[in-house]
Image 1 (cartoon, rainbow over the protein chains, first blue to last red):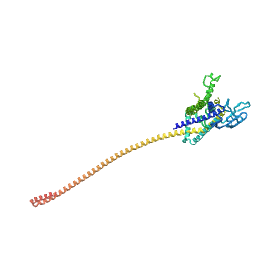
Image 2 (image 1 turned 90 degrees about the horizontal axis):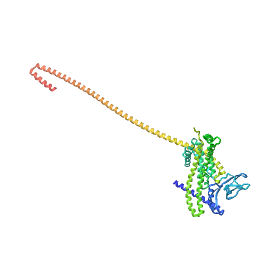
Image 3 (image 1 turned 135 degrees about the vertical axis):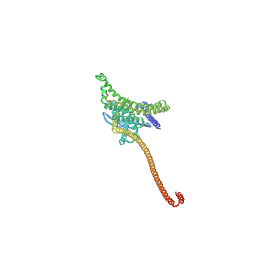
Image 4 (image 1 turned 90 degrees about the vertical axis):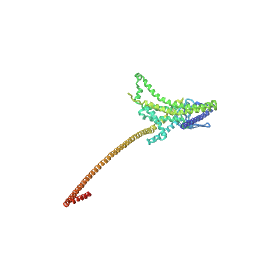
Length: 360
Length: 165
């Protein structure tokens, strides 16, 4: 019974994705009409969904896009701070010198023109779709775990309720199977960070899979986000590193000529500390990015075939595409967990490696 | 491709938001959740241990109870046996005493009977002696008068005596 529910959920997700895609296709078609060229642009369709945007696009009714405008916060070095709704710069409008660039190196970003007439990027603190999803996920995380902690504080020996039990199972799993083996005796010092990272990634992975507003942002598939997460792991690894850890980096036990005049080994070791978080960053980003990409490509196939060979072929392809995207969604649900797990595990291992004690 | 380049705005927001969430959760959520889980784990382990101990103690008590019952039963059996021996002895003693008493009574009676018999014999003897003397007297008296009559008389006397005895 539960399995059937899951399958239904996945099918619903897939169909909503296809609706989502169709609407965008109409949008793209609309734009294309404006350019007197009725052709489906798969590239912009896919990257429009994977990338960031200043408004939260929901759907399109009779050619009018329905979207939630988000605040744009920019700082111009010449004119100072600006804060306005993204609806003011939508559809190529200009608001007090601000507009969204089309083409060029700042494609899709908000820019202004400087005195020479060149497009200049301001310092952009806008609440974009991704920032919105980020803030939402943070609120959800706090809303889940603070009341839970409160309940646990009040009754430490009480029987946990169903939702607490679910989280407790996951917390226990991460603690006992990931954090403890990797970190040994002083694991309690790092488990708050690792648990936060795990639930942050897991929640955002899952939120990214739900294609309806206010979810569906590709947050963990964005390199800025994974960069910051990896940076945290890097900082914690190196700030809490033991003396022995630093000795092994700057004065490793190798023949002296490898480290004395030219610090060859120390250089390699330092680069080694950097490659670890970079691998973390790219792994998470690439996995989630690729997952979203595959589902979107499957959806785009329907429209590509429709525009190339007509509606009948497109309808035939849609059956196959939806079936494949159902499969992909199931896989992505798995990947959502696995990637959160892998990021947490590798972070724990990297931190554990910096906790080396002096061995005799 | 700007997809592969970090976006400064998102990085700043991510830094702020994630640090905040991390700080708040690390300060207010994880310690109490983790310590509570640990506490509960210890509590459960301890309770299980206690239950195990209680079961063992109960088993020990059961064994002890059985032992006590067995002991009591053995004691009871011994008591019964002792009582039986005692009663048997008492009965035997009583029988012996009764026998002795009876023998004593019988011997007394016999002695008395003997004595009575002897007395009776003595009396008879005395009587016989008296009778003999009286007869002899009468005979002596008769002899003096008539010989023939004397003999007849003796005869009658003897007859009398015979009938008497």
